[in-house]
Image 1: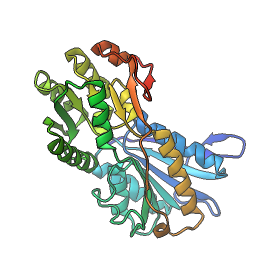
Image 2: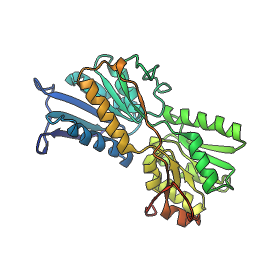
Image 3: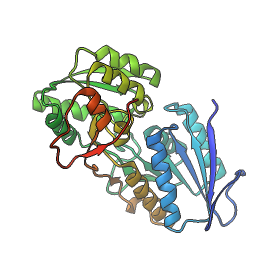
Image 4: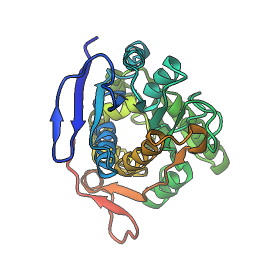
Amino acid sequence: MKLARLFIMTAILFAALTACGGTSRDGQITVGIIQLVDHPSLNEIREAFLEEMHNLGYYDVDFDVRIGPGADMGALTSIAQLFVGQRVDMILAIATPAAQAAAASTSDIPIVFAALSNPIAAGVVSNLDSPDRNLTGTSDALPVADVFALARQLTPEAQTFGFVYNLGESNSVAIIEQTRAFFAANGLNYLEATVTSTAEVQQAALSLVGRVDAFFTPTDNTVASAMPIFARVAIDAGIPIYTGADSMVRDGGFATVGINYTDLGIETARIAAQVLEGTPIADIPVKMMEGSGPVVNRATAEALGISLEGLVGIEIYEGTLP
């Protein structure tokens, strides 16, 4: 499968693009970056990471960026094994499947992960405070209770939610399990429609139209990649989508209390700097990012006929409809 490949070298005064040879050059740091798929949310993390690494003084570093095709573990593992063969100094893995592929490929090269909703459920670490393997990083764990407190405020009539997610993404499954428990404790109802690829998102959403009052999708990479299509189905049906990330709101979702991925990318860079400076992985706890506060898409709200007047403490995105 053809993978997009971008090689980036930051220098003191400029960033130059060049080709990479087989192994790290003597005396120069090489960081291999595995990104699950080309998507605005994950691109935002990568770009914030690279900018912060430059800000931290890592000018003369080779960043070898490989963009995967999605949750194709064979392709992601091939990328990770390529980096192992090149003897890179560190691997940055963006999103859960990328981290799982990297973890399966090396126990020696330090791995910093970004945007894992549940690193323990993903099987990459068993202790968040003192990582017990060669991995640490940042988690975008979703504050489930906060999301549905926002839903009660904005759409109090919504009692039945439709969950749309990829059953093959461990991060999504972990959030859905938390959400089911929350619903059981709070007397809410739900139906589920699972997908295995972005091509199935539209039909999954349509299967729930007329049966649910609102949609909910966690920080699911598959659904995020098809978010404009999902949002169009929901808007046409008059159903709000509560999402797991603010970027999914920008793509047409209605609202969330999610994670700011620029902040996450910056924090991931700070962790990577500790690793490159020689701090043992066990001494670098996994950083659980805090929610950035409620956000709502104004264009989506207007299309759904939901008034935002009088709202306090909620950030409103001036988005456009998908």
